[in-house]
Length: 350
Ligand code: NCD
Ligand code: ZN
Image 1 (cartoon, rainbow, N blue to C red):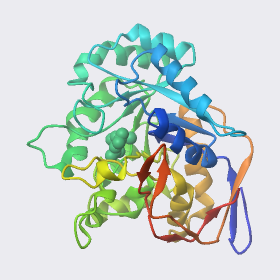
Image 2 (cartoon, rainbow, N blue to C red; image 1 turned 135 degrees about the vertical axis):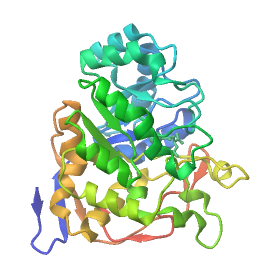
Image 3 (cartoon, rainbow, N blue to C red; image 1 turned 135 degrees about the horizontal axis):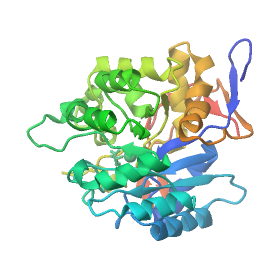
């Protein structure tokens, strides 16, 4: 990593996005370029309708993504398998061995967008988890309980106690990524866990706390799941991301929804942050005086955890303002990006 003396620019190994929703069809073709412009690889979430739960479906989805890549793009989608109660462990093993699946995603049923076919009880997928532990296939976890008696702001912390801590204890060889963590409890859990447990952190959870959803009125574009928490949690996440710990890495959770689906009586969860993700993250590292740790978070820790090589080549970010548009168009849909209308102080050089 090289830094200009005045820190007016930062050059790092090409980064990856370890958690993205690319969708499918025309919207996928419309949003893909934003991710491919910034990242060499991305872990592609499988919560389509119907979900990507077989090797054949993942192969077809991967081919669709490759066909939609802009000319000259150098981007590799890493596919995931959506776990269901009825998942066949042999399907996971086959898909992992063939290189189609990089990991499998656990959505507790009804926890979030596109999770209706998710797992109703981790006990139901025990044979699949045992196979994954044996073959070294990472388990990616949406860590929220769905118990309606649990306050929405407590669902991640309760998930640690009820599900994740027992799972990690019972299956010490299972690689687990606690996705898009939002609480100090999650930071603590991952920090204290053995090296087979890591976490991704999104830009929005580093930038906003739950007040952002209610600033002067209801703000649907600040709503995602897990929902942003209190300020003390945001500060814990910023400390973790910029700590230099190899357990925390970049995963945007970019989740595009059309304006009409967000600005509605029952608006969808999800923040579309792909277009300016690196610009968003680097401002956090800059504000925390941790620019020298950005490369580890964005480009090194993820591959190390997944057992993949780091990317060749570099990207450069410059301290040059960029204005984030109010709306972007993707596949005929208008989408409001994260930081809409704001000026970010760093720009990705292209
Ligand atoms: C995601 C989506 O829209 O697919 N939404 C979100 O708020 N993050 C699903 C998810 O990752 O929870
Ligand atoms: Zn997600």
